[in-house]
Amino acid sequence: MENKKVLFITFDMSGYYDGVHDELKRRYQTVDYYNTAAIKFKYKNVFQKVSAFFYKLFTGKKLKNYYKYSQVINSIGGRKYDLTLVIRPDVFFDSQLETFKSNSNRFIAYYHDSINNIKRKKDVIHFFDKVYSYEKKDVADYNLQFISNFIYFDKPAGGPDSTVDGFSVMSNDYRVSTLKNLAAYFQKNNKTYEFFVMNDGKLLTDDLVTFIDKRMYNNQVVEHIKKARIVVDIHKYGVQDGLTFRVFEAMGFRKKLITTNKDIVNYDFYNPNNIVVIDENQEIDIPASFFETPYEDVPVEIYNKYTVAAWLDKVTG
Image (cartoon, rainbow, N blue to C red; front, top):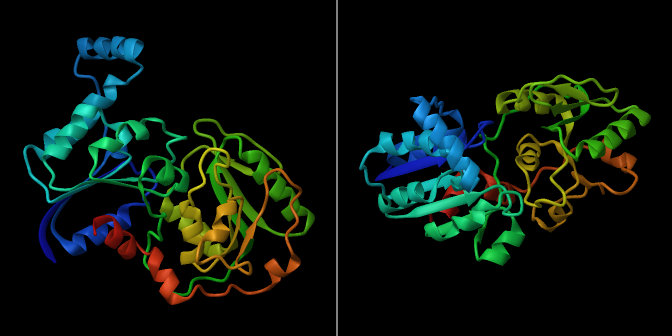
């Protein structure tokens, strides 16, 4: 264990980075962790609330977020760190990022959303010593460092027998039509599935997919994946093309994958026996052999490249 101080800041609503936090604690003497998605905030008084209203009116920025995330800065005080790693730095104001940077020997960020999806990510690049991104286009356009997402859990032992053919969970957005097309294909071919669509605050009904009104956290997602033969990944086509965590959940649990992400064929773990790419603009036609043949293990030397440990080796190296 290295005698170093690390500050780790995420905006993690699902639990993807819990494994990174655990791995950091195994490596470093002191790790301060803040998940900004879990921070609660109430205005102290009417003046603060009114100020925030007019600030947003004239600048388009949420002063509430400044107050909210200042709790991190207040908590760490003047502590100095050997390394600060930030996921979603775009949620912070410039002055807050400057404070983190001034207190860190090395200041690193990771983007698991594209700049096309979150524009402010472009504006904060210059604060960091290195910015890693899973989006190849952003890496090329903005001189970032490429790294994919990762398998966020330890390699599981043998699980229960699969009871459904397919599983997916996603937000209610433009991609739902593609998921419904796949659901119709599954029904037509007598395949069973659990396709969930998150619609916060309002429960809808549909013959093809199941709407849920609360976020499904990773521990729940994992239980569904264990029961499925195939994981379905409808990525945000037209917005970003980095491989989602769903891809790495499939690899980690030795599940086949149906995805809309065409770039997956360029990765070293791609195996057409395990992975089928569908086109959101074309009729779905999946070979029967995909459903009938068993999963083929990813070679261990390739699998290990996508673990949390390997991811941290690169990001902190």
